[in-house]
Amino acid sequence: MKEIIALGLFSGGLDSLLACRVISSLSIRVVALKFITPFFDDHLRKDEQTYRKSIRDKFDIDVHLVDISEGYIELLRKPQHGFGKNFNPCIDCKIFMLSRARQLMQEYDAAFLFTGEVLGQRPMSQRRDTLRVIERDSGCEDILLRPLCAKRLPITRPEREGLVDREMLYGFTGRGRKKQIDLAARFGIRDYPTPAGGCILTDKNLGMRLEQFYRRMSGEGDSEIRVNDIRLMLLGRQFQLSHGVWLIIGRNQEENDRITQLAEKGDWLMIMSERPGPAALLRRAAQNVAGKSHETETVHFAAGLICHYARKIDGRIEPGEVIVDTGEVRHTVLGVPPPKDSPLIRPL
Ligand code: SF4
Image (cartoon, rainbow, N blue to C red; front, side, top):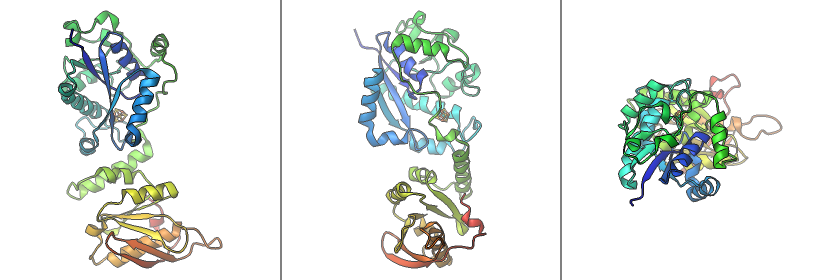
């Protein structure tokens, strides 16, 4: 008999763990898809194999990472269903993930898709009408099963065709967690993550920072936003200098290293030459600074800001030499810290 395969959306939270285990308990092979972007679970890409092994060992689930960064960055420009409380486009996010999962069905020879959604658990994205919008707009009507609340939803194709016994599914609703916790105990699942989200789009401050960034980039004729832009946006102190120049200054060694790693062709890297200080990046300087009438002013101003955050001398903020590395040449400029009341020493 042909093996039945189902693809599940896997956040790593309890509901998605349970959904995977419910489906695999019906003798169906489950492939759990973990979507990654710079906004959530980006760190997993560094060591995919270790992550997969840990989920297999702990929960007996076969998880695969799927990078959706590029399309997702574009989605955030104007999500059709708007944003939640912060910069989180939860409905469009689910539609996007499900559309991608649907495209992967052929590759995995999957018969249907499933999620761990629970009717009424989240105010925006798990209302009955929203669940319907999500399946309609992702093109997943009839092939999307929600095993934790299926008994409260219309019957789907995998149930009709006998691939899944509806009687073995659940009818959970609402925000309570008790039923899920009981079910986890029945499956022997312990040590599962708490419901807190790992998605920075729901974070008030970072969400605001990203929103401002998107507004700025859209104001520049919908400039291309790259994955590394987002990674840089989430690091260090951020400055918007005059003429639309973007400066990032590290706050500690880890951020300094990260800024250095993320530098791309056309970015100018700046570091102190004579005393410890932060690494800084003038993003897209080859395009926005080099050869412009404001080049000298911009570079000196950035160097001054770097000195402001560098190690003090006898407790005082002092000028210092800063190396500017354009990727082609290196030269040194004298940075003079801006006056204390300068609005630019208050980062974005
Ligand atoms: S919290 Fe983040 S990852 Fe989750 S649905 Fe909303 S936008 Fe997507």
